[in-house]
Image (tube, rainbow, N blue to C red; front, top):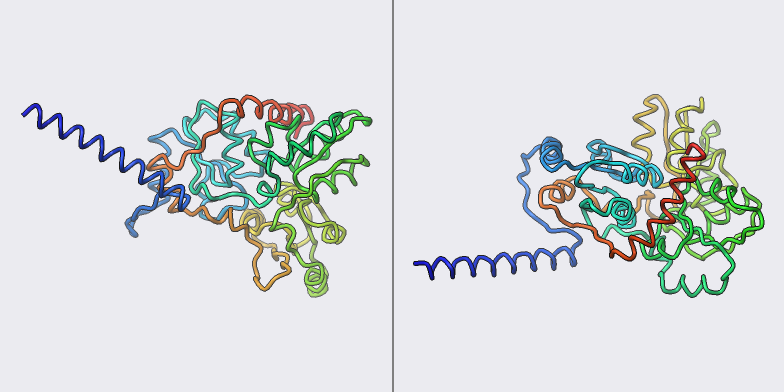
Amino acid sequence: MESFIFDQRQNSKKENFKMNIDVLEEINKKGFAEEEIDPTLDLFAEIEKLKKEKNAIILAHYYQDPDIQDIADYIGDSLGLSQEAAKTDADVIVFAGVHFMAETAKILSPGKTVLLPDVKAGCSLADSCPPHLFKKFKEKYPDHLVITYVNCTAELKALSDIVCTSTNAVQIVESLPKDQKIIFGPDRNLGAYVAKKTGRDLVLWNGACMVHEIFSQEKITKLKERHPNAKFIAHPECEEVVLKMADYIGSTTGLLKYTITNPATEFIVATESGIIHQMEKANPTKTFIPAPPNNSCACNDCPYMKRNTLEKLYLCIKNGLPEVTVPEHIIEQARKPIQRMLDISAELGL
């Protein structure tokens, strides 16, 4: 009998091991572990219950689906999300965003569990700057300080002196001595905007965000003609030809605040369309029009951001998978430039 029980346990361990391997393989293949969900289940209520049970917090970027924004504990842009990740006392951080954001949370809170609903929620901008190539690029300018936009991998942050966001990029550059030579990466459009605003001569890495590069100058011009009273607002990741047309340029948080404080009743918005949900909630009597892209699709959604769904979010908290991890040596190296950003932002009141 004892032998039988022992064998049962051994078989159980083998089955659990095989199940874990199968789950990991599925996550590697699909980005998440698929599971059938009862269609009558109230996912909002279940997620709230799981958050309490596991002492979890949901951080969501403005570009997420409206349902995810509505269930989140905190909604923000990259700077706000980084600040929240650094100060939370939750045991589990569920990051409804893209992979580099979850990595940043792990770097700032290495003792916490960081989950991402779909690990294939990547970033075209981060992909445009492979760390091994950037390292060679950096070596050409040994006397330059490296500022990297937060939209990059943990490995790239580890190669940096300061990290920045679209909210604080201009102020961070201006906080440095005027004779300080600077490499700015990976976004060439944001870098060009910062160079223009600060008057600095920045060495730029040639990277870009696929969403912010598809806006059509011609279509926006025609849209402005049809809506002459509308304010055209744009994110600094957009190309210069688009930014020149803008009434206001700012981060996602900056754009949102502008729509609240500006008396205009119509806005044409050149950034990922997810932010419009918050704009409409804050301004129910105003009209928001997504800026048209230069393709046959009528949308300007980020395919990576939109990989996360309410169903994946529920399964993520329920099963504790997928989990985002970062090697300890990368955490140690990457935390310094991120912390420097947070310190400068705090000093400047950002």
